[in-house]
Image 1: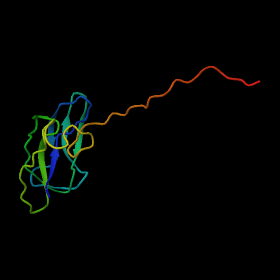
Image 2 (image 1 turned 180 degrees about the vertical axis):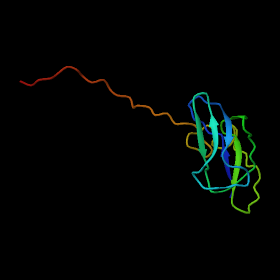
Image 3 (image 1 turned 90 degrees about the vertical axis):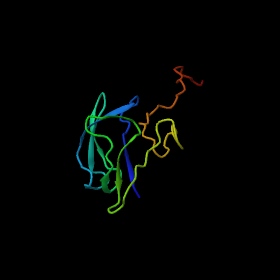
Image 4 (image 1 turned 120 degrees about the horizontal axis):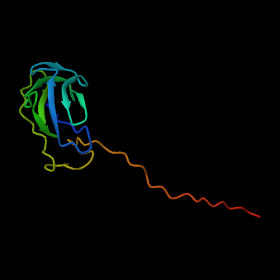
Length: 127
């Protein structure tokens, strides 16, 4: 089964990412976890790993393209499989859109400290 390679959210307020360079070319065999593309945001440039093993197909974002977060930029298919563009739901559309942890959710999860009750500074003594 084909797997979409999507533009990830690398920052909390990130809306787009720029494709700096493809490390792998269409038709190349890739292993899951192997770097396949370099993405740039306002603050960082990182290598994105293949989400699955197979053959890289349908590269839709070229070097220099600015792509919205969550959009499909390529497909990884099993050897011999003829993939078709499997569009990931656009932000705010489709099943599970905007639901943290739903399939296709690429948002970075922010950690939040639990609310704490104030500590009493008064000491109590028993007589």
